[in-house]
Length: 245
Ligand code: FES
Image (cartoon, rainbow, N blue to C red; front, side, top):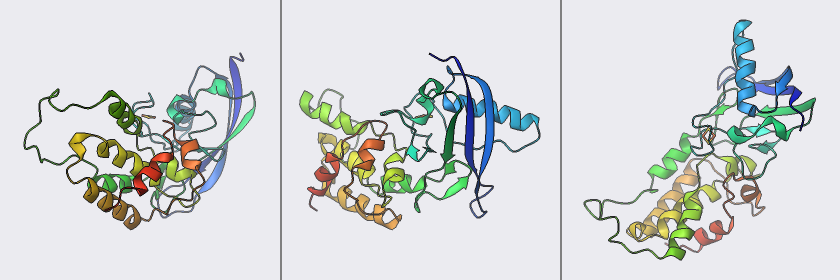
């Protein structure tokens, strides 16, 4: 394995939501392949700051592939070329020496650019707020083991509960559809007894909010499934569409 590589980075720089953005070129040499791509950007930012330049803004939090905060396009692919991987878990050993990487933010009307590689994903929060939660029907939290759920059902619900809401499905879709995100959230709650109360109301409200936020309709191309870092199946979109309200 090559231990140190050079990188040519073409990075989208945009000062503010209303300003004109452009790609700027940066070169990095002798970078350890043990670094993640985000750690390489940290290193680049250190150099930019030392030289009095504005650092590159990008989202991240856990850097463990679990929070869904990170995400941008690497050579046009959401979260980069490695299947089932968030950008924070993408390591430089994935790339050849002297490779060129084009880094740009998610491109979708419902995800306006804030700065550089950062987009505003609060539209997802509003979709969740429209119905993506369990109601207070039970008045108080029920005893944990009181509600029986079969192993098959719990595994199936968990498959969709792995959605981290990163937005890669939207970024990969030619219609910028949020269908996989919404389907995953609906299928997570809709398969469990706790989610039965208001089940179909939830479907109606979240689908309506998805449209209000400016997400497109499903393109049926399955790009979302390929881009999803949690490898959630697009079959859940069919599941959602069978939920009649
Ligand atoms: S920073 Fe949390 S999933 Fe990438």
